[in-house]
Image 1 (tube, one colour):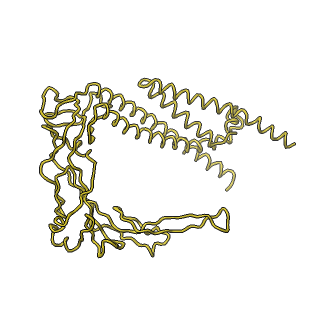
Image 2 (cartoon, helix red, strand yellow; image 1 turned 180 degrees about the horizontal axis):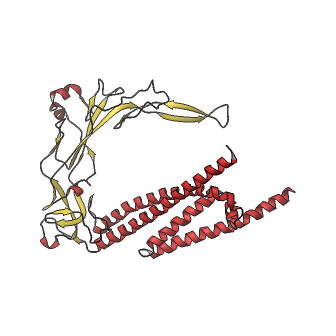
Image 3 (cartoon, one colour; image 1 turned 60 degrees about the vertical axis):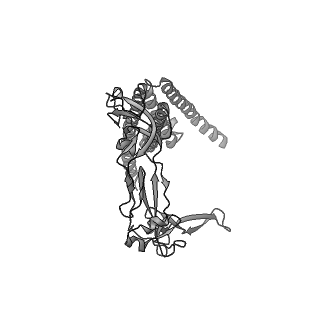
Length: 383
């Protein structure tokens, strides 16, 4: 590749890196703004929350944000439409698994060649609720898996779940996720439809489509059932008549509140759970966008290398390396944006972010100024 072609490619990468950095900055501003609005909205909502007795419907609390602790109950039973199994539960899940090959790579040091490794491909058989694609296996012909399930997972959800005199909304019912196994009995197996009774065998509380459940073959299927039983719950939402809906403030930018957990928790506990859920999302996006800034910066600084030698300080910075300069830029930009976003809501966090950005910048410039000195020192020593 000619020098001109290399310069052209580098310039194109620099433009792409600049676009990536601009996109990352925009998304960082959006992410921090969303996080601040969420924190402010949750705090504003919980400031006026009222703990109510769910055993009776009190019209005085209608359309208010309320906190409830009570025993959840269901009417009737849930039934699996294919197998006919019934259970008094909030949710009934039919889980389908297939016995399949799984590829595992094992590396060990070569005994007579230091630095090299001996690669061994292992193929254990495992139960999996997803198709394991065997076409990409190192030894695909000897370890071929089926390409589809003949039976599929299915979940039944109760329509009417109550806590005292209050009926839970679908949004709250969906938050019941404490699944536990529901072992099948001989009586359950005997009630199977005739066609399924001939296909499946009961073993250890599960149904096996296999000649020998104790020694399954690749392609065999097993069915197990899981349930979410009614339990004592805590929730926070807006009361609407004898049910609940998501609480929304007058400010559309603030988040909805409709939270349920199994067990007894105060409104403050639920607040912490809501904040932690949002915190994981915020930090995940921060990490991803930092990576995008760092990656984009490495491409941006490549074209700068051509002219950086003629610009004071830039040459010294680039002497530290493109990756370090890109890392510095990404870190400082992100810290500055975090500080700007949180200065009104949490000024201590904002000041700490700005101080960290200033410290990183100062440290880098001090280190950059030593690069030419160190280079000259090594040259004099060599002479």
